[in-house]
Image (tube, rainbow, N blue to C red; front, side, top):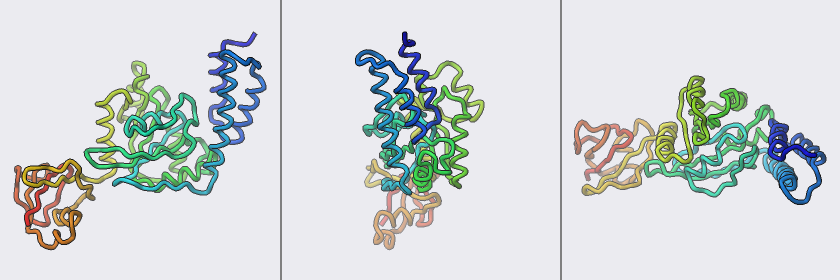
Length: 306
């Protein structure tokens, strides 16, 4: 008499932890041989799941064993979502961008990097989900070199950790990134907050104080987007025309001046304008008239005076 199918599934997933490539395929095939040969019912479903895992693992190995993977940059900045397998990266990317992504409650659902755009305060930022990194990634295990190559070209990193997991699960991923010589601005997102038990977030914050994210909590996602924006290091400057403020701001580098704003609008405008009026953080009062060298701040509204 076989054990209850739910228990069997838990044991199978436990046997697959940390296995990738040929090692994972070998383990899956061994599991397949051990399963009862039922054609219907829960055990038939488990057999189908194992067969699908073999196919997906082989596809993943084929895709990420190449020397490089190219992601076309879009938006004003590229931010990578990084974490161990099944850390909630796909669900977070879907919630932020509404791109259709295959999401599963098992490791290695995502086989290759997935890019999507999200609006943050009117500016498009590209998020890239990096498939789960495992121990040995920096040495090429699990196609790690190719995945880390994608990460190396990003502007910042959001490390994702299932809030119910221990911080050590993420530390292993961070170690692989460090071994690859990648040093980018980063933050931690505690994912799957909707599944958290009392005390889970407090335990994680004791290890590293940071931000919790739930894909069913709109306020949490708004706060997360603003934290991602700060991570890019860019500032948003809105253009003002006759009391009307453009909804889509300009993305500027820190330390940008009014002349930089005018140049981004049009080079001829930069050569002829006299100054500007400012509303926002850099103004002493609304509508302050400033010169060409005035430095703008994130959230400023600028009316160019010609």
